[in-house]
Image 1 (cartoon, helix red, strand yellow):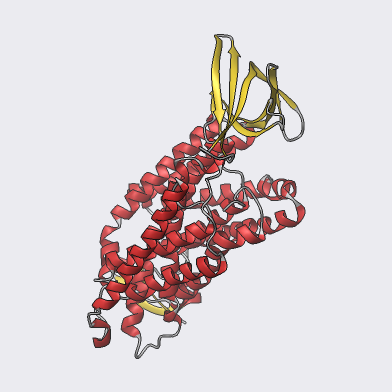
Image 2 (cartoon, rainbow, N blue to C red):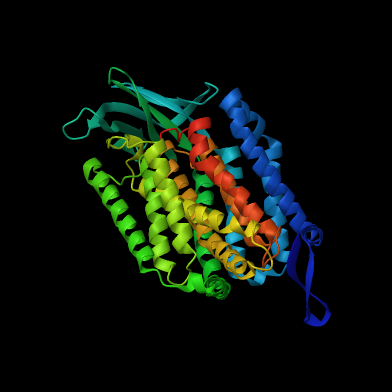
Length: 494
């Protein structure tokens, strides 16, 4: 297995070497090796923890893994190694890289502050009763600097049905400054003096409500500042690498052999027809349900199929391999949705999903999965193409895979951040190590590695890179489907 890469020699000259991939890995600096080892260890630890959680329960993994000193220490060591690499590698002169990776450190700092200073618990209110405390997971009472009184709890329904559309608690808040009214509902938290109250449950008789209580003003502020910096950093990095991305686009657009170069208008026509058909199906479900059709696996698979076709149509005149890979992804998603999941009845959206952040979160993640699926299909043939007859095709597929990694990782990161903000509104906590979000983070880390060039040659063809991208798609399948059917958590509705 050969790897092509570039080393800077004395006097600023360059030497181009063909060395085994293992030797390339040995030439990595100590900082890179530490970053690689810590990243792989954390990914294995997180994946294993979700499986253990299924067997031993959530409290076991929260205490033994996510809440342990060694887990926090590994994240701190990873952040320190990344920042050390940025400083020693002279990347402080690249503000986009510094902003993006600095955001990673800020997010971890926010998590550290939340761990040691935040308060979480539940508060049970009965109509007319004045309550001044909440209870944490260890059943310890925490006094509040104000009092809450439930004035009314109400279940709202979709028009003409008995299906719940929202759960709303009307509460009177008594502070030193006086009294005021506060409304708490699904996806609309109440806020009082740095405390956040989210709707969790209610009493069967309708005379009581249960609110989630969170007090974490500093940790949340730091984390959200990190999120904003990460989004800005992602956009800045992609813009700063536009010349490299343009070269990858040009390499992926190189003409192939005579057979591939023939125009096939019927292919484009069929793809357009399929995209229009899927558009009609999604539009019908949207109209009938009264909400964006992304509420279950069937609808998200249809959206992935639609997104793959639209993406292929937008670029296939230049990147002709997309005439194959895009429709192949779309057909696979449509077949799985139709023959495995069936065609479920259109039902009203669950109250917890009635948020404007819900469609934004799902759309960005599904677009990322569509691109990762195309990368998978582009990398697969590269494992079998020979050096003699398939060199040109291999170079185009390699360029396409490297090109699509940028938007795929950016969309996935954006989806995770939007989901975290949504979780903060709905459950009062922006991150809870739910198996779904844990595997999403794991997927992001898996696909971010090839973009850094730490484990693979930064340019040219690498069979090891394509093998990695093929095997990495297993992580995507586990995140999207495996967690729903094999594990449990807050995302069981998906």
